[in-house]
Image 1 (cartoon, rainbow, N blue to C red):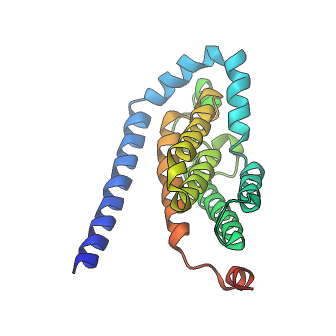
Image 2: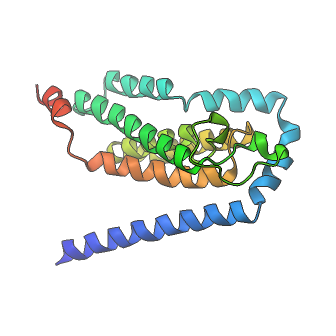
Length: 211
């Protein structure tokens, strides 16, 4: 009975979190706080902060995140099945990337750079990169991996989540995404990471892990 109640509570919590993320997203979007944030940040597009956030943003690129997965597998004090770490990490990034791309295409939200051209509302479906504002791929993948790693290394969770958050903030500062994009990306990434941490690996990956 206790396990059933725990399961029901966890599902209820997930639904509440999803609704809250969606409501914050819609509030920032519809109220045009997103647009005001872009106009406020636009003058800071150049300077030292831009170089700093450009570096942080690079850490959220897919190939860099794969490098972090491989690096974790090579650390000498990691007492885990290294093959499982690799496969779960890589599959998490693949799933996050696919989910991201599907939402981007279907929604077709214009990026902030198109705001002054009069493009603010969705134009989906769209296959154009200029209309791929929601969600932020860098942020989704960073939070997915941070959430996955946090399930193994709980002491690292503040550091992992903090780094993922910095990547999300960098995407807003560099004017690639609106604040609301980051809100929904944090939710998506964290959910995918938690899901992948408990998911049974596909047969082809399980075969390599169990060899």
